[in-house]
Length: 82
Image (cartoon, rainbow, N blue to C red; front, side):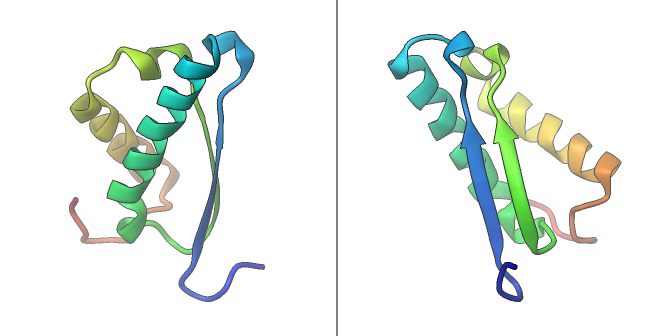
């Protein structure tokens, strides 16, 4: 069990995504995304899976998509904005 107030995260990038350089870049982008939204997340464990668009989509669009997903899943804390 995670400690109170903690958030654990795992990043997954399969070989379907590309070579090691592309997989590492995808994980770095997901890590940066998670760090931006982490203060708004409820405590718990999260797994972010890299899909091919993560390599090409502008970071601002990724943030918007993450915000929509958090609202839809209702796992974000109320009231906080990044």
